[in-house]
Amino acid sequence: MRLGVNIDHVATIRQARRAREPEPVTAAALAELAGADGITVHLRGDRRHIQDRDLRLLREVVSTRLNVEMAATDEMVAIAGDVKPGQVTLVPEYPDEVTTTGGLDVVQHQTAIAGVVGRLQAAGITVSLFIDPAPDQIVQARETGATAVELNTGPYADATPDGRTAELVRIRQAASQAHEDGLEVLGGHGLTYVNVKPVAAIPEIVELNIGHSIVARAVLVGLERAVREMVVLLG
Ligand code: PXP
Image (cartoon, rainbow, N blue to C red; front, top):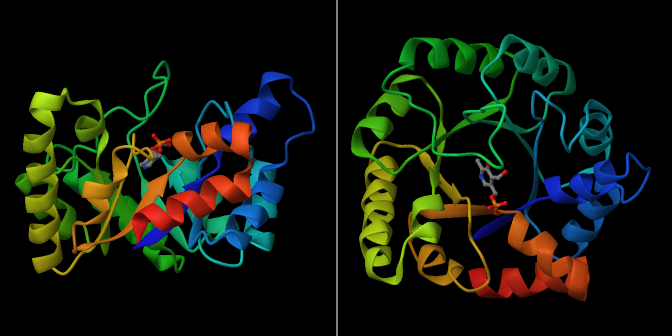
């Protein structure tokens, strides 16, 4: 299982003071040294954490794979075409949300999303769609031409102990369906050192993107240790 470390909240700490530190690019290098298989950042329209400058520096320094989460807007497609990260993950984005809430609605917006996927792929970028683990979303995701999906594990992470098994089953079934459809299957959102193991055990999922929990632990024990401990859990 590959681990993509989302370092947005390193930038969140910096932006809290509009200061020069901590540098996301330094965090990326440390995470890679500790065993991360990829670095993920979300360039938000409001630039609340990661800045355009960070993207350019990360593109230079990341030696694994840089995965940039972004909304399917003309502004973001232009930036991706400039920076050319290894992968773009298209996510829904709302101005007042604290974090990404729910997957892209590919069923509703299939044509528009397919257009953006095509433009990114024409620039040589691999495209993944962040979707809820629902059969109709997977079917439509495949239709856009995207080659990968990231299944939203947020509802599993937020579920009560009683509801958690049902959410895990949804993710398992979705992973199996997406894999059969020829999509690369990733997962992420809300995963922690406590809840990650059952998701990491799903054989069709090849990569998990984890941010908040790793950066939160890193503040207390250091980034290298935090990443290494997650690598061990992913097996
Ligand atoms: N995957 C996607 C698409 C996300 O938007 C985020 C949050 O930026 C994550 C994974 C990581 O979520 P978390 O910070 O809860 O680990």
